[in-house]
Amino acid sequence: MEQPTLQTVRLLLRPFALSDASAVQRLAGTVEVADTTLGVPHPYENGMAEQWIGSHPGQFDAGTIVTYAITSQEAGTLIGVVSLAVTSKHQRAEIAYWLGVPYWNRGYMTEAARALVSYGFTEMGLHKITASHFARNPASGRVMQKTGMIQEGLLRRHVRKGDGFEDLVVYGLLAEEWRHQD
Image 1 (cartoon, rainbow, N blue to C red):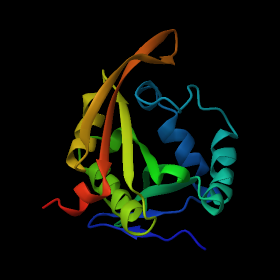
Image 2 (image 1 turned 90 degrees about the vertical axis):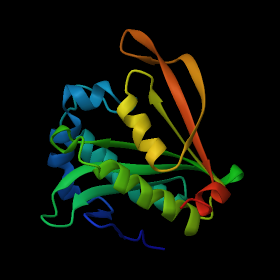
Image 3 (image 1 turned 60 degrees about the vertical axis):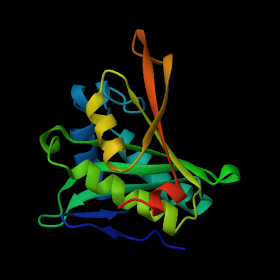
Image 4 (image 1 turned 45 degrees about the vertical axis):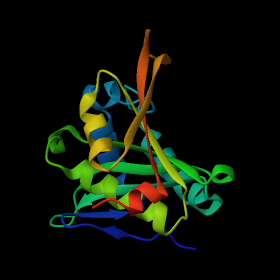
């Protein structure tokens, strides 16, 4: 099965291509993006983006992770990423995302996350989608709230980031809750 493309009002979510590597390195390589995510390294070194992009087809085929390039419909410009990491045994996935700094505060991430949540429930048959964010990054939590997610808890000093530990705010959305949203 081939990974489908998803379309929203302003965005096109598509599989990554190796030609996206330089844009990934430039956007993800900023201190601001690395500081607000757990999985994005800093510095973002040469070859990392190609290796990461190269892992996507196998992950999709295995049903473990589906990763989308978030691009503007108008110009086709890469602006970020959104993904679902699947735990098939529990019909659950965790959504993760980052957006290049020039595209912050425009509603793009909420639009992309809503599209992927819809795909997860309708096409992947998920029972639940979860997410988490650093407590010091409330903007990410607002994206989760706008996709209909409900805060489920706070994991105190749960993950190591740099030289310290971060609190994680945890969100979740059940398929039946998503179906009953306005």
